Length: 117
Image (cartoon, rainbow, N blue to C red; front, side, top):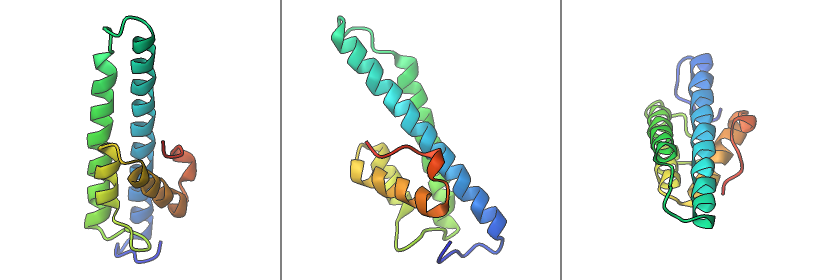
């Protein structure tokens, strides 16, 4: 946890774990939505599952909120910009998603996230 400004290392680790858990949940929701769209495209293309899009949007809001806490608490690592990377990842930037995943890897929570993409 280099360049950590939190006075409580246990609390800082909890915030990092929370972020990585939410990032993984967003990735799962995003992949489920992508798979649903592909399935719908293979059929008649008219039955996009709106609840899965809602799940993805909800997960996106949650992970952005968690990244704001990391940013506010100064828990970025190695010059990362976790808030910017998270917002950009949710917006579809695969490289930003990779940087967010790398943040979780370096924080010790690599098992909570998938690879970018």
